[in-house]
Length: 447
Image 1 (cartoon, rainbow, N blue to C red):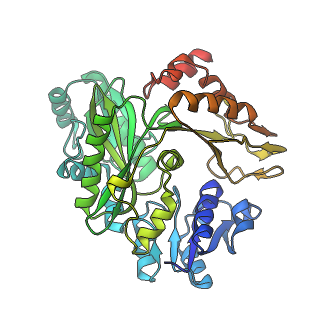
Image 2: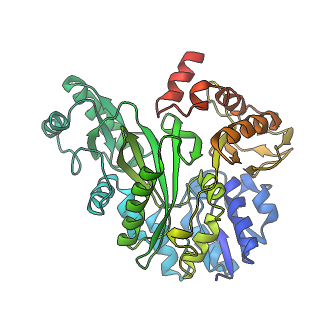
């Protein structure tokens, strides 16, 4: 097991990883920008190192400063959390060159899954169902038109190196295709420095289903069930559930088995999430995230397994602590992402939190790094906390969530709490009857 882990992140995920390390008896080091000097994870860590000014490029994305912090403190491993450098293959390679363990998959696997086209090819080779579309990057309009005609409209153009909805355009006919292709390329080039795009069949009313997987790097893999992340705004997840209200046990076992076998065959090491669009009983691979997900706590709630403990165990060479038959699903869990944003316009709302009171009681978990008097800096993601609720079934979980949202108090800034109080009382949400477009349509009606 590691002696000292450096946590290369901030906010609630840094605190989440820190707690896991303390439970395992591992010393912790956190890095921070000058803007985060008074953050909770900095206060609680065994050691802290300031690595630069507020802009992420000068601090949390500064690989050389983070490696230097490892060497100064004697950290023998780095947990990247999510975001920032968590899916940066170069970072993984540099750590390896300095004999520091990256708590995550190999740089090669990060590269494969970070390239959307190569990821799709790999998924197909591993037996994972994929969305019909181009085999690789689309070279010109002629090829795009040919592929669109073969798979049928509507189609979606996606950036090969993309994410977060950038470089994604829908075309419902040939005339729209030309514009979509040019626009997607332009956006992809500006956002990612790579204008390569590919084309896929566009599904009209899919759900977003993702499978939590783990590999030990030695040919063994397991899955921890699925999460339903269909409630999204601008391709960003807002509310996540485990297990999905749309799947039955047979579908769950089938897709879970496929994903577990895939990570085993790939020789994958650590945590990963294989994401699908799901429509009319069919799964279509969209990407694999080679890191811990924001929404991992709902999986922990229904399995009783600490996924960060598992990450650390696998990275240290201890292998998986469970076999597939050991993983049982208990009840239902929902996570709401609490952002420092206007609940209607979603405009960021940085500032000082004057009062912060979290709900409690059976089945309630709040992952947050903020506190009363904490000033939210304007430089980073607006996520300030996650409310995770677990119940014996979905009905109990929803009732408990309603109660927890009523207890949650954040004063001094605007947050998305009012949005969740609206959603928990909506009949469609209560019935689990929603898709990836539902939330944006709902918001448009309530403007």
